[in-house]
Length: 341
Image (tube, rainbow, N blue to C red; front, top):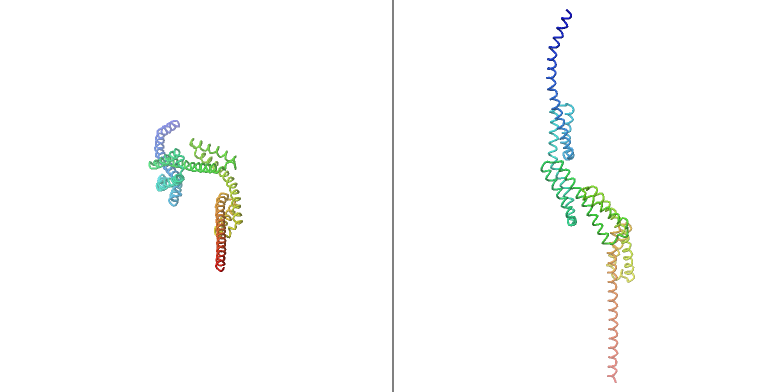
């Protein structure tokens, strides 16, 4: 009897088990589909959220960004595809508002640097690398228009680095030329030579496409050249100081402060300004001002000398007239005496 009951139970189990397995499989299939749908919605929201963040949407539209973030937080709480898709749509809306402004801001940065370089004349000295930078900037614009946003962002960043490095390089070149024109090299030969080496490194880095390193090296070269210029201007200002001081004393010796008061006063004012610059270690301004005061002291001395010469000439002419008058008087007296006889 027990054997019969066992066999009956076993038979029932074997008949029911496939049905249970089938039922579980059927219920699992829609659950997996729901998981996949949720994961896809999460991935979409995360992707669009990251894209909007990468292009500074939170800075351009902070209120809209905060609203999208709130929807994203809600989606994390309820964990439904619909909630994540709503958040994704919100971030996408902010991104679409942002991208024209972002692209325009990058273009404005690039054009500001480019225009400064053109105005300064850099394009005449670096025509090839200027053309390369222009081509990169135009590529960025075309990529934005083609909605290839990440590539466009990278191209714009590269173009900006190229113009920045070119700006630094042009400033180095100008400083180098000024040093050579004024023959300031010997005032700080070590920095002058090292600056030339670093500048060559900057050029090599630029040609290799490492624009950040090119700018870094160019900035170091400029710093060293500026040290040479500072040393040169200090020595030159000292020389002009002594020359202006000598001309001032010469003007005082000839009484130009009296005979040519207006010019001397202007010269002395310029001289005093020069001394203030010099004491403040503003040597370039001091040197230029000393040259101006030196020139004015010479003009004052010349004017005083001319006045003195004119005065002497007037005195000489007066003496001649007196002498002529005396002679005329003597002649008249002789004539009168002759008639009286």
